[in-house]
Length: 235
Ligand SMILES: Nc1ncnc2c1ncn2[C@@H]1O[C@H](COP(=O)(O)OP(=O)(O)OP(=O)(O)O)[C@@H](O)[C@H]1O
Image (cartoon, rainbow, N blue to C red; front, side):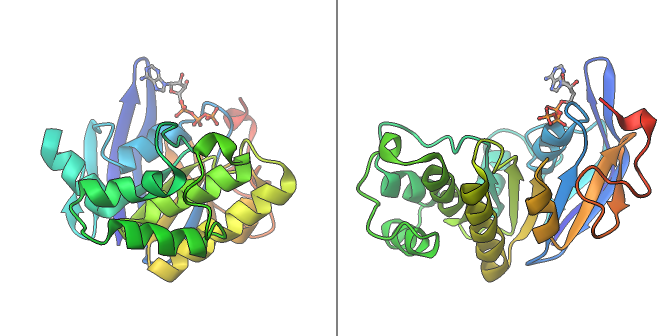
């Protein structure tokens, strides 16, 4: 469903991915952990086709994202990739429902408003679409952001610290909504996180270290006490 192969990603002065491989199946949730600065956000951006790799490939449902550019890249992303950020990033000028519907409107889906209403129901915000984003709590805004990420029925959802700004109760609810909604929609989910609950809820956890992803044994927690952990990866 979503596949990165031999991915090499550089930022100035540093190699973030060094021949990295990743395959995520439809409906599967993969947590990516690693210390601050290890490159999780950069990796997600590369998987979204927002950062061009020095080598290797990224594909979603067979559509190659690593070498597309401009309008073609934007159209592929809109059709196949949904993104959730740490702070929701809803547009303040639009209502919650308009925020959720917007990507589907851009993609030309005539049923954008109906899709948004259905997804707001799914994330527990039914009947609240008329509200302004500023009226929502952090947890509600994040659930609206999950709805927005899913409105084009993407094959891949990338979530960057989606619970990083939330208290424990809201974090748990957002995690559940994100994982359930992706599973239900058959989307592959890659979630970068420091949150042990998110890692536990995911189907598997991978740790970014030395430019590769290493499996973290179940129960090891996001810090990964098992293989892949070690002094070299400390911040
Ligand atoms: N455009 C850029 N130019 C220069 N350096 C960059 C750029 N993007 C990222 N970096 C560097 O790459 C490294 C990885 O950053 P990144 O944000 O991907 O890490 P992270 O694991 O997501 O961190 P955190 O957990 O704190 O969010 C950092 O050292 C960062 O300063």
